[in-house]
Figure 1 (cartoon, rainbow, N blue to C red):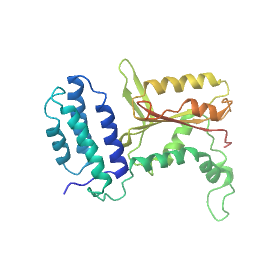
Figure 2 (cartoon, one colour):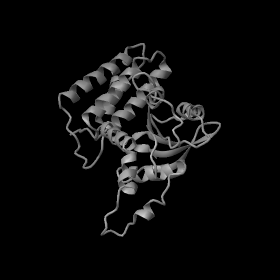
Figure 3 (cartoon, rainbow, N blue to C red):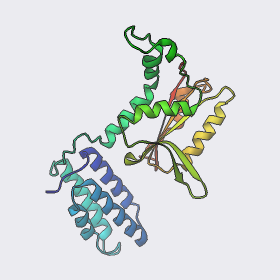
Figure 4 (cartoon, rainbow, N blue to C red):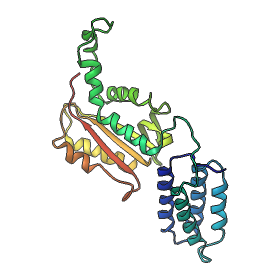
Length: 259
């Protein structure tokens, strides 16, 4: 029996994205590419290739004979069946779906300063071997320090996360600070310097947002020297939604934490 290998919400969202893309198709070449992509998407959503094969049969032919609309109708009916509960989950234990993945990432980034407070700033227990004077020696001096600490918080939750991964960008390569491939997510870390102006920070983020190819991009700014005048406006300026853009971009600013 064919089962869903992702959550119902994720499956519906992904299939709807393919429907939206299919409605943009006008050329036979686009139709062929859309069919192949959609078939792969369906194979990844379900426990076997039955659904993908059925979709391929529905879309056999060309735009001229209506196969394009048959494919969209098939996907719409598939969403209806999923919402009716006709496909059970595969029950993969411990798997975090895309929606909850992003909830976790946002919480880790937004509460980064709480880790610093609890681990390094609060008085240590007298019965422990850790000493306050030793913890006070740990200083977040630049973005490499921030990246290391943030990565140590991300990786226990998502062990597949990797640090400092280079990706080919055509004429030049780009380095992802933290890359979680399974969720198509990049976390780019920034840390302000004493001589830095807000304009330099905006230029860096603007360039990264344009060149990075992953679907989900998070900018984590540890504004140690408070170069950002209006944090709320800054975060809003570098925020995009998949509803209106090809990438989802979110920005989190922590300002400042002494350590």
